[in-house]
Image (cartoon, rainbow, N blue to C red; front, side, top):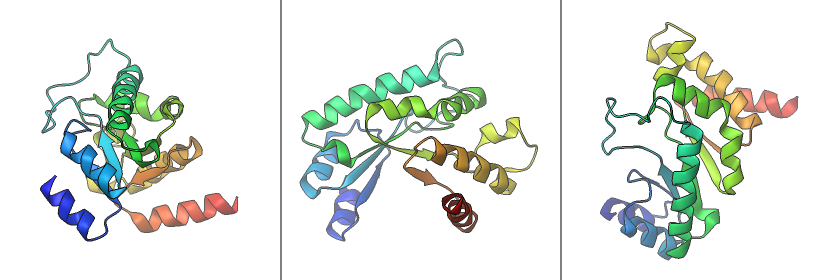
Amino acid sequence: PETAQKAAALGVRFINDVSGGMNPAMAKLARDHNISLICMHSLTLPADPAHTIALDADPVEIVLAWAGGLLQKLEASGVARANIIIDPGIGFGKTKEQSWQLIRQVARLKTLGAALMVGHSRKSFLSLFSDKKSADRDAETCVVSAYLTSQGVDYLRVHDIASHAAMLRIKAAL
């Protein structure tokens, strides 16, 4: 919150809350400065690859339940829903298959009525489709990005901005 406070004083309009909305000071900051708060789902902080959603659980339902409770809590503390951005936390506390399931069913998360951001760029779930090293998965990332935007995702967190800008220009022209 101390770093976010300094950023707010400099005019930053988005804060990435790594606590996933669990720190009340971040909610207060978002409310007091009318800043958008990005809240990412993760089972542990810091993320622990050994701790994932149960294999027999529906990761979309898990994220929906978490986000629904989070939205209620943040709104009760005075944060406007328009300033809350939900990030399902691709790869954080999820297996590759669970991350893929979240990507494929991302439209279900739109039922929350909040903006969505997905950070999927070069992530390990892409190894289900490619044996390329992480740094070489930009083409695969761009394909997933095109799908995510077609499903109404509001924000993408990516590494290769130029390719994504080109993809979005072409998509808009189509």
